[in-house]
Length: 207
Image 1 (cartoon, rainbow, N blue to C red):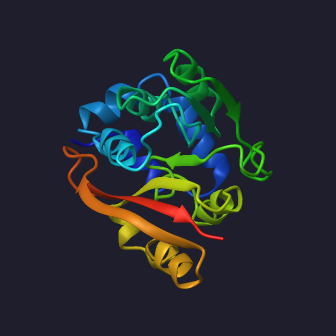
Image 2 (cartoon, rainbow, N blue to C red):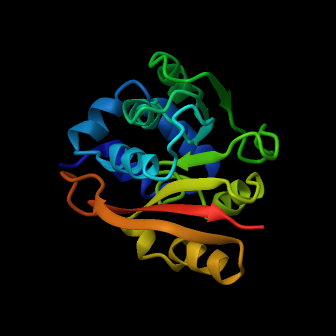
Image 3 (cartoon, rainbow, N blue to C red):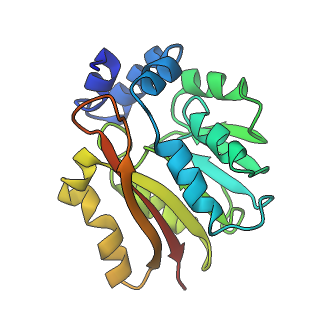
């Protein structure tokens, strides 16, 4: 099932263009991606729940978009969810879900407004991927994590084929920065055709 916005984000370059697309797309985003069989948020939330038994643990949902990821986390039983996104249009929709404790706008050129150790768990659903954030966002999030903190994120098919993305986790494991708790491949945009799968990864920050 083709979609002009999905096609555009996979071809976009630069934060400014990406923000413009997502702002424009915000009103119809949920219908478009759900209509294309967007299963990664629920897959990731259910996977994360296996490693975080305390459902009151604070979570930063980075790249929260319209809140589909936050809703999936809430459906999995998590109760303390904050969100951050670069698109004001997306954040407006996220506020309407009422699943977030607080939301913040992200300027990709500046540091995220989060204190070291404030969040024991970070999620990035469909974020560190082609058509979304550049690879360096992975290192930015690791920089906010204290030892023992978890990051659950996904890599779509296009990203798994791109060494700039696919090398992120192996590189940080080799450097002794993280260990992998779980890595599972499954459906992403099940009805989209190309780029129909994604890998859900949960890693733990080491000292």
